[in-house]
Image (cartoon, rainbow, N blue to C red; front, side, top):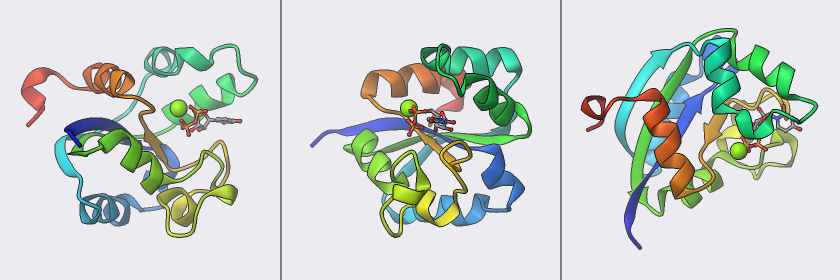
Length: 139
Ligand code: UDP
Ligand code: MG
């Protein structure tokens, strides 16, 4: 299996609750190498663009409010089979349904405030990584 990359955000709820360290520890202990990382805050325009695929969904307004209300940690991660393995590590969108030991099961509150983002394809991982990082910020 090829080494590839995924993109993640530790979302505002995870930062507010002080979970940055615990979540990063779980990510690196699971074999992901951090290629790029920063603490940043999305503007409304950023969030509307990042989640444009969801703009017709009923939760879009709340999602934009949530994702812009405080800082996030954005990161690019590298591992064999990164996209799929990271989705397994974070668990399902709804933390109530997420497997035991997954990041969302451990640290998330609700389907809306679910602690962490993970790209859903190699193509989106590249688009989302480039949305947040310049080439010289990737290692
Ligand atoms: N979301 C929500 N309500 C829903 C579904 C999703 O508020 O019913 C939010 C949630 O924060 C989720 C994000 O929108 O992480 C993107 O949704 P997606 O279906 O892409 O879930 P993910 O890929 O993050 O598991
Ligand atoms: Mg998604």
